[in-house]
Image (cartoon, rainbow, N blue to C red; front, top):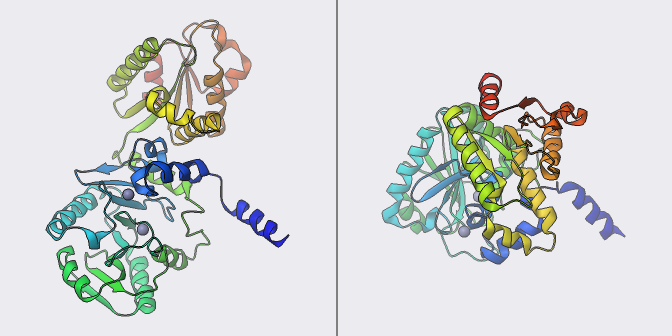
Length: 387
Ligand SMILES: [Zn+2]
Ligand SMILES: [Zn+2]
């Protein structure tokens, strides 16, 4: 009885989010040797806007942090599966430092105050290793002076002796003297503090940040992704023009000739990139190509998975462009997408041509603007949605 109650409480605590679903974990286990970050940067991981690559270079990518305790919380992830900074080749530490500097420079329109931290192990990893994920990732967060000072004070009190170095290049020498489980924290001024202690719990800094923020937010990303903050991060990238706004393009797909579909996407995309260059228009037909569809179809709950993925993309979009201009066509998917977009508060532009569908009252209630042509639609967007 008690067990049932605990299980029910857990179920309530864990918010349902596709990115944390059982299907996702199975996929990570099956295809990515249990590594969530190898999955996140893969084509399958990129089916989740929470993993949007915001910046990339030859060796690293930057994505929003799952469990974004604050908006703007990012992870700089290695393209290769290396466990942590202690395992980065000595000859590559200078390059890593340069890459980090470049990224922080790039992020200046968002903030000029970032702390960087990592929890790793300079000895060999074991499956029970307490650090968070065994794939190189630096946590990068915008904190103000007061918060960052408090963070350092708090950690110093709990973890004890630290050493301060001024460059990643000094790390090999530090790890030789202090092998084991460590926390690395780069302050706002660039000074790097390293703490080594055997019993640092998993997600330790995340717990401390929740404490000093006095937030009752769940620090555990496995329970709460803080999707609202991830969405805010993407909005900030968009408002500072570091990223394009996105338009979800809904159109006839099922029971339609593939060539014809591709042609339509091509025409609409070309038109948008000419008339609204600050918008990235995408169609789920291209995102979920044949190879991906095959993997989705192999899941036992393939309908749920497909709809979850598409709705999640819609949730992170800035507008819905729905081509419902074909006469006598049953636009089942498009009409449902329109209703979802409406409930999510996303503006809906319906391309209707001269179809009589525009006279339907239910549709009128949900659509923000009826466009008779692409020109008409892009003019409306430029005047109303890109201010
Ligand atoms: Zn990995
Ligand atoms: Zn981590």
